[in-house]
Length: 218
Image (cartoon, rainbow, N blue to C red):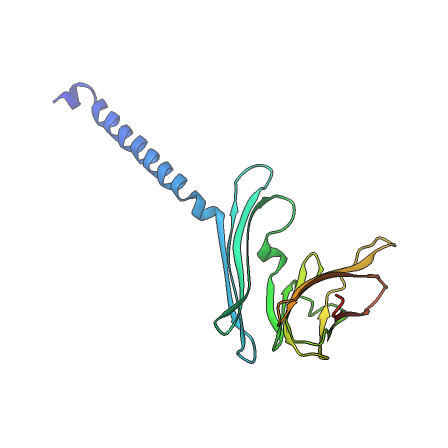
């Protein structure tokens, strides 16, 4: 009877409260899941062609949702030889300028049985640099890490004394006329000797042969 007396207004008020409650609940659920919607996970796990080495990458990129376009990238890179951990590095940083790890390294692949390349796709480039790593240290190299430029790196393992490996590298051209190839590298011999260095050479207009020669004075 009170419904009729008030022209059904109580029912409208009740329906309105249900609608408001539904909006509040939906909003809460949406907010609680925002992190999920803004987070991009990436995972990579691949064994080398000869089955000796294995690379694993796990990470996530979270869009911070601000007007500046910040994101937080955190992850871990592991390279193993059997059960032995050779490389174990992690990162956790916030940025809005440089790309995330996975955007800088969409290609992670074993280019030789003992050489891993990370970077962009160079399969369609008309020419590439040829990079040779020569071991003249007199002992086995446990590993060498090479940063050829911003979006390309290599890891080479177990290079015998007097041995070498050659890989194709992106030219990474810069339009500046004084542009130079600048390659940073570091690593460790089997006996535990650590080394680091930089190779610099003027960048030509087409492909170039580069060589990193490691000796006991490195």
